[in-house]
Length: 292
Length: 280
Image 1 (cartoon, rainbow over the protein chains, first blue to last red):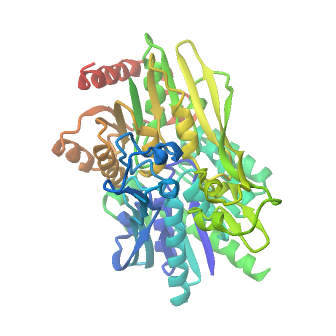
Image 2: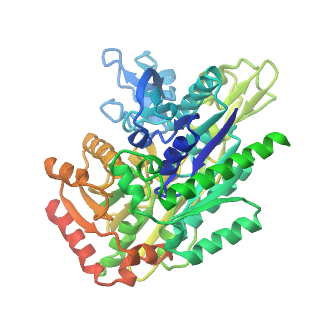
Image 3: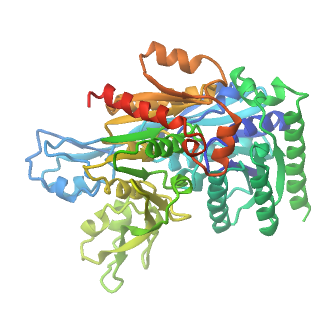
């Protein structure tokens, strides 16, 4: 089984539009939305949910007012300032560590498991999709990403699918780290802007630390061809393959407005052809690796 | 006054709005805080020299092997799986530790104390009237929130503070927008922009922060964002069209108000409108 994660560092470079298109081209992958903070892939792939699984995130402290003698030890020991002077828990600050419950002399504080989200196994026109929703303001998106990926791997092996395609989240922190561990390749969708390049370099360093092989796609390359050249030269120097260059094209937004991938919406467009090219390059890289 | 700038979806123009707003307010001291510590970008747009302000550390446990009786209580207590204990060894995973201090409390023989573990840094730079502080998560460290918290500790009461938030809707965003007087939500009228905007609107409603919307690339997409704002009575503070020259100057790291000074007035009006909405 091969796992490819699509990342960007910077947000809004086009990860989700590309993942949806590749899912449509490949037509038999298990596609996974690991941008659990702001998932959008379902808007293009229109999944119908087959199965729902609950996600439990961090525990949450709970103070039994009847037992509480207001000694203040919980407040003193909480490193997250999650308990106010009225002995109320700020759910958004509580990290569920449980220190309050061990220092409480009257056992008035307990930690309670919280349902923090859901993972869905769904069917789309292009195969199975595993996606998730983190309830608003919840912590621990990394843990939910891990659970989503485990379910996706189980689904893929059960259904004998050889490829898992993962839509990642922006950034380089917890959810991204959870989405890159043990993947085979990372496709980075970047854009030729100063911010895009800055964020690309940080992401590449992260992938180096985790020994994940990257390849790069430059989206909206014609916004700044000079910067596009810089990215190409940089990748060449670092021996990072370039999957392709995609021009800025409002057809992506038009397809999105219609709830479709670019492949369905404008099969004969230049971008659809370029995406098909990129996907065959990706396959060549995967197959080469298998032969080695 | 603290104004945060957030979006849900990434790449809608948070940094563009934060920076343009900061550069347009010329008669006040502005503190611009970049809380997108995973991928901070404001320093690309504000031309200033940046120096290290401080490193950000979290306390992580250190086990004194000579005292440890291998009772495994620390590992059993740790909710973050940052301690692995066997009959003969204790291994600490500093990157998983949230620094709650619980392991040291439960250790019956006081074998655990704490040491500082670096996870990032704060950088500082300034121009005539803008002070920029950005947080930067060290690469491969997972915890962004303690750095965001540290960036926000730099808020002083006497200036206007603009907080550039990370994308998403979970803990880092909440930490960034928490305590602000007003939040500017930057969106684009696409289905993705709309979907993520509705998520952020719910978050801000939940934590009681007044907000308004800036619609970027306003001529793309469809009507859903506009209809939603209208039906929910959400003020649309500013619209920015999709123009190639805006995209091009952004791509070069040049703020739009520098390349197109006529936009300064619009961002000044945005600030005035926020003050009006807050009766300030």
